[in-house]
Amino acid sequence: AQTVTQSQPEMSVQEAETVTLSCTYDTSESNYYLFWYKQPPSRQMILVIRQEAYKQQNATENRFSVNFQKAAKSFSLKISDSQLGDTAMYFCAFMKPMMYSGGGADGLTFGKGTHLIIQP
Amino acid sequence: DSGVTQTPKHLITATGQRVTLRCSPRSGDLSVYWYQQSLDQGLQFLIQYYNGEERAKGNILERFSAQQFPDLHSELNLSSLELGDSALYFCASSVGTSGRTQETQYFGPGTRLLVL
Image (cartoon, rainbow over all chains, first blue to last red; front, side):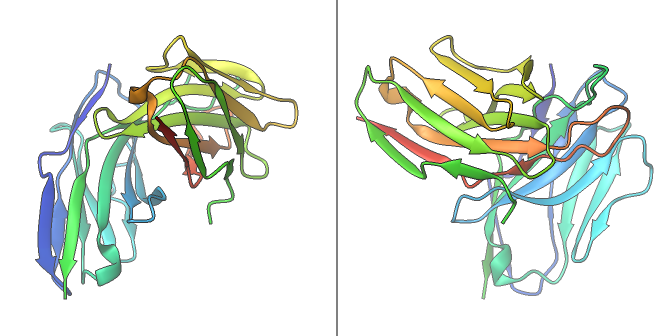
């Protein structure tokens, strides 16, 4: 079974600063996906960024980027030029693809989350 | 808006009762996933359906069951409810295709269940 660990329960930074959220995971799989999801006070789960394990290049989405270290099983999220709207819970998640003929993927395994607060 | 819809948004019921949560996936998505988010357990994967068939089970209790219908909507049935079943229940959907394709799960707004 996979495990995902987020060691920072809460972080607080000033607006416009850069912040990095850490995530480590444990798996024996070689092929998998990693995700960061954001959950604002509305409780909606919003995809922030994804990374395929077979890709060496780190994923980026505008102000969001990841540092994926496969050997170290580390997947950190960097938020640049942080904004008040970035205040939310951030969840790191692991997913392995299924090998059924129909494909698809297994359920997500989530970390416990990091509560990020952006101060004005 | 993710395109995944869930009804109802809120549900209040009593212990011992049975409830049904409904989910409609994004247009074109064949896979549906159910998750439970509670203070005690965090976010937990419950069960997955792909094109009407059960594909994977997570930490789903025997009192809980689900199904996916021919029109691809899914229902999660929770019976003999206990106080500890109070949680936010999410449905997510993905394309669910073969091979090494990009599988991303998009979440609905959730159903908040309160058991009194």
